[in-house]
Length: 299
Image 1 (tube, rainbow, N blue to C red):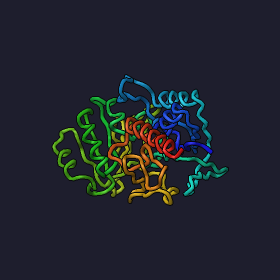
Image 2 (cartoon, helix red, strand yellow; image 1 turned 90 degrees about the horizontal axis):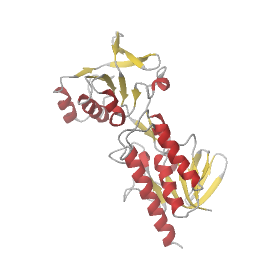
Image 3 (cartoon, rainbow, N blue to C red; image 1 turned 30 degrees about the vertical axis):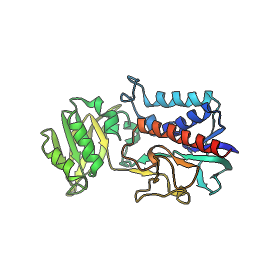
Image 4 (tube, helix red, strand yellow; image 1 turned 180 degrees about the horizontal axis):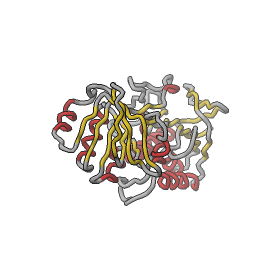
């Protein structure tokens, strides 16, 4: 019997573990792949308070080592279900706890083209607010047609020399207010009815190739590409103990509490306005604090 089982070893999950361990709780972290989550792919982090600059790998590793030093138990197994009695079932085992924190995050939708993984952190990013500052006075492209893509293009228009906004349809799906603002930007160019078909370069991205609906192919020189075609949460397996919105994110009240007592959610897995490292850390600390209070209440 554990005090708390945390599902996911990204920043939210590991922060939860940190707070729980410091409160002398018995904690198990279950992780399907590797510690760190999406932040591992960040080439540099420059928007985290009091840290001037750090790589995503170093940030995640520091946090991992911090919880390991406190005695955190981390097991690499894939969770397939949570029972109503707080039993977590993996492909290999079953574990029981007094409380559970779901911190499985969300996966960025990929372009699914060649060399995508190679260029992550080397000109390819899925977070404009995280990495946009590296492209001051440079040429960038934003891929997508929803509000996130329009927001990213607006954000980058104030930083980059030139912004291409590339969308596969003939009109944008995002907020019309963002679109109207973008139309006023002299350094933003819209490219509609077009798909990106290749990423070009050696160690770093140098250009992209796009193809329009008439099969016309064009190469565009860019320093960076920001993909904003949505995220996919990994929450379907939890739907018996939590409520999901139409996009699959966990609906929470009091920020991190789900519909089931003593089951909490932290980080990108939940419905929220901003998915950033700072908000993941905040969710992690809050979910741990609430779990500690509830466990104490039930002693």
